[in-house]
Amino acid sequence: MARRKKIYEGKAKILYEGPEPGTIVQYFKDDATAFNAEKKDVIDGKGVLNNRLSEFFMTGLAQIGVPTHFIRRLNMREQLVRNCEIVPLEVIVRNYAAGTMSKRLGIAEGTQLPRPIVEYCYKDDALGDPLVTEEHIAAFGWASQQDMDDILSLALRVNDFMSGVMLAVGIRLVDFKIEIGRVFEGDFQRLIIADEISPDSCRLWDIETGQKLDKDVFRRDLGSLTDAYSEVARRLGVLPKSNVTKPTLIN
Image (cartoon, rainbow, N blue to C red; front, side):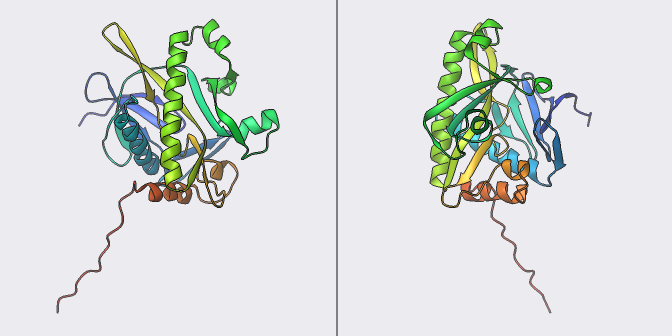
């Protein structure tokens, strides 16, 4: 079997040329990074969990009519996705103050916001993915006004879906970030959810205890990241239950 052509390697995933035109194989690594990759580690099983969880969320979004790049899961670490042109923005939706918002504005972590707040960061690791406004986005041509209207609509629809799914299993969706891709069907452009949706890209807190079940466990040295992600997967019923039986001894 010929070795696949690697297209791109990021902090958490590797992209390979897909088996069919217009497709990409997305491989989930076990690497964990924080603070713009200043903190790094390899967490056994993290890639497997994120692959399954991202499949779960992307499939759920498609079922309610939110377009995504996801086609199907190939194995425990890989999924087949649609090739798309990534809009150079991270789209962040915040329901509660946390992380950089709390630091910037002096709002206590966990404070419920009066409404979901959508923020945008310019995707550039060398610059630390700086926060930008719609004025910057328009001025530098990263997205049109129609694009921004569609991106805002997609972000809020994802928030509604994710908030409800998490609430049902006792988890508070504090915030999350998504990436948006452009696909072209003839002369028609369509925006879709791309990259991944997983505990790597969300803040998830247990509603009753406030326990963190996301990458803040790694950022803040709060315990086992695999245990946290496994708990999310367990509550959502994503991972199959183990049905280990003892062997029968025959005399």
